[in-house]
Length: 246
Image (cartoon, rainbow, N blue to C red):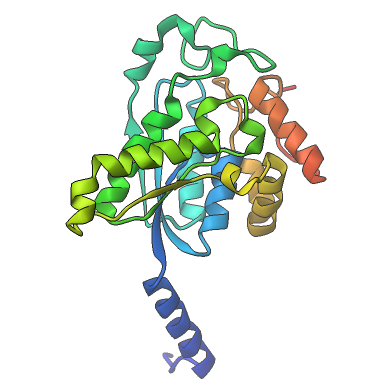
């Protein structure tokens, strides 16, 4: 039998509707890894999120499935998986993440630095942001990513400037909104800081994130990314319930 909703229920729905109506839009580059998932969970309190995930020929295609899963958990307004698989043909034998015959290192090596990967991702994400009137474009770079030039705050600031310059006429005419590229690195947050935020907001779902560089059903536990994942859990003082091969 149907009955009228309670007064408290009506008030809660009204507050939710008003809050949702005034939320800003943000585009987030979203891989399904700890960094992007925790960043999205953090931003979700203030922004309506639009996720963009890239298939660039990486061995770790499992991350695409994980990205789909978390896009639903985090209630993205929209989630797009963009196929730029042709990029691996440009990298060829120079990159361990895309070249099938190259061994993935267990510690940092420049062979895992995909040439201007974040510049490509963020440029495409920014094109979507300009089209959606979203003022924020986010990605999960943090202060432990210092070895990667396209994760540093200086890179983010310069790319923001360049992309806004590329749309300056539309911005001046009021047809486009100026964007800001933001990352946790710009807030001086580490991977373990992000992990603490994500665990607080998502609980044990955080163990379903995907960090591994390899093509496998479970995370290898040996590659540089898995090692960083394990270290982040230790530093965050969270018991790691992730299933690893090793």
